[in-house]
Image (cartoon, rainbow, N blue to C red):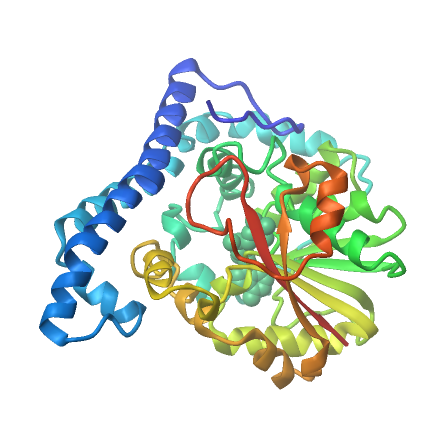
Length: 391
Ligand SMILES: C[S@@+](CC[C@H](N)C(=O)[O-])C[C@H]1O[C@@H](n2cnc3c(N)ncnc32)[C@H](O)[C@@H]1O
């Protein structure tokens, strides 16, 4: 069953919609676990030995594996099933969101009457092509919508299906895990101003405000539909976050005005050119001693070629064109290009805060980087890769 949302913008769904969502969750689990395992067996038993016989060597990299797998029927079946399951994740929630828009709007309107945080829109902002020209991860219409709350609610509800409960009822486990990682690893760091970039519906911005109640927390996104929804969502949870429609590659914050700049699953949706601009902006906006903390896909250099091929699927078939280039890039180099000293770059792996005993979480914050348990599968517990830059 999808884990129902628990904040104030939730609405009651018809039983057949919940059954449809449950089916999609089961289908995705089957594709990402069982079919993916079958594909791996086919690779080990047939595709790799055939390539070695023909070429006298194993595959050199993920691209050679992709070229060989494209013609393989197991890959084709896996890929078609995964593509359809991805589309179905969104389709399983859209009719319900569409029929409840009036209710969502009324709730958002009431919540805006006495806000703890704020909302700042910029109708003159030119939206970047990575948002206007792509239905990223096959989400119909992408992050922006003419109806102000539609795209936000589709994302919020669709993510509960897509994540199959892995991120908890507020789908905020990533934010919780990274905020508690910073609290644990840098106990003397007391940020007064924090910004979450590419925040979408603010689900992972809220945990920073909860972890650092003394700080002023901002969430920025270029899509107005996302930040409007994010604002109402955070208000409904009684958490003060200041949302802005803003381009993270051209922030309007003053120089040296932030202590901590965070993002989750954001950079892989930017081109490398925009990632460079974003990091240069982080360097400008951060105070000396301030930090960038980024949750992202693990770099290709730590993974076997087959695992890279497996993760590249999103780049080829899930409208995430920059995903692959981001994983192949060197974040320390990108940071250095933006002015961050290379010896102030660090990487880490974080367990799921909401599913890990606090003492065990604290222990794991101290252990060296290990990507064991990092996979594209749906499991009971997963771990997240992150990197940091200190100004
Ligand atoms: C994958 S979503 C991020 C998800 C979210 N941070 C999370 O924790 O799950 C990427 C978001 O970045 C936004 N975005 C893309 N380009 C941007 C830019 N240049 N500046 C600000 N936001 C941007 C998109 O509108 C979208 O909401």
